[in-house]
Image: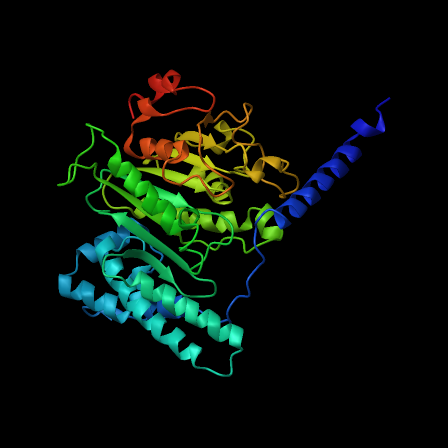
Length: 411
């Protein structure tokens, strides 16, 4: 006779209890409280609606969500003046359009940011808003002003609600390899960059990775005038992440929506350059959900501080990309139960032996958000993946990953 403590019913209750523990731990481990969304206004949707009614050369404009290859062909058929005209007429639409040339998107997003600054400046003076509302408007205005710095390259920008943004470090057109940083919970325009804890925010993560990749000495990569490898890094805060504690953080809904956007970004990148993804915390859920639909140009998916990738094993992700995982010894995410039941939880621990990822050293990384700190082995390993220096990787618990040399030698 089967005992009660091994019955299916008991296992279900034990699992539900474990999931309840997850929520309690998240509440006490730094996943911040949810912020209120702004109103129901949606500037991006209004811009897309306007684009759908637009015309050029007497012809209707293509659908804004057409395949990126089709949109790339459309923009290539236009003169420089015509492209600039569309960016000025529909800045939010063009600035978020996969298939539009990156430099045109930068131009369009500058115009969209300038308009957004004006909107937020008016809100700071609107005494119908609460003091808290005016203060938030002031913070948003200064964030947008920061993004308007002449040397910044904003690939995507949406001021709707909590806001979304993606930024490029390096020359996306000329880069031989591209790295994409996918952040986790509570990512929005206000948390996109920080003065304190800079390397725990998407902008700081990407900037740190870009600098580390350029410091690598790799003879096989084309080089810039300075002698550094030609690489580019994208800080991709262009999905709606879970906001604080709640169901979104332990389910895949936000990840599923983000996966569609991530796949669209990767497919739209210019040229045939290879791509590596760096997925932190809930960002690893996004990468896990998207893995099956990513194009073959994605050669590597590296996760750090992961609650799971919505897969039982690396093989179940359904991708030919190499899967790398790391977790620091004092990262609290290691204390949560790694399981999934009825859509709740994110599955097997990516650093576990049963998952089957290549487990990298993260020596020097502190806590849950320290993986991109300069001087850590986690950042060094990320940079080595980014430039294809696989022979220099350091695995967890060993001096090197040389035993992986055969299956990465042809990359």
